[in-house]
Length: 158
Image (tube, rainbow, N blue to C red; front, side, top):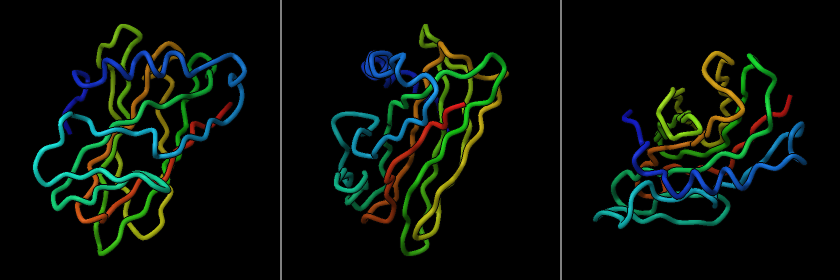
């Protein structure tokens, strides 16, 4: 998967303002509806749909991008995320968490796949690859014809 650093300028502000001190030690649950297409305008064959998550009703696969609010972690501690999704007809959704520094520089990607009619995938990002000042984004390639859906995701508190 390629880096999506160039398409997230406006989301950097969003995630920065979403994280507050009240969430410092709690799990943060986010619904899939906050996700957006990773590029505008949509290309022919893409049709993003919202409702109980985000899916792609177009005929071709489509990329989505989500700013991920998260609680603070202790220095050197791992960050844990849980992504919930659905796939039908033998499809799968290829996803990844992209870590950017506070200045927007690419640091790391942790890739994974969602498959099956209901799935929850836990992803751990080692503390050597993430700090509290970093920004986290979830990106996924959703299959067409509503074959895959991101229902939501959780950033697990310490």
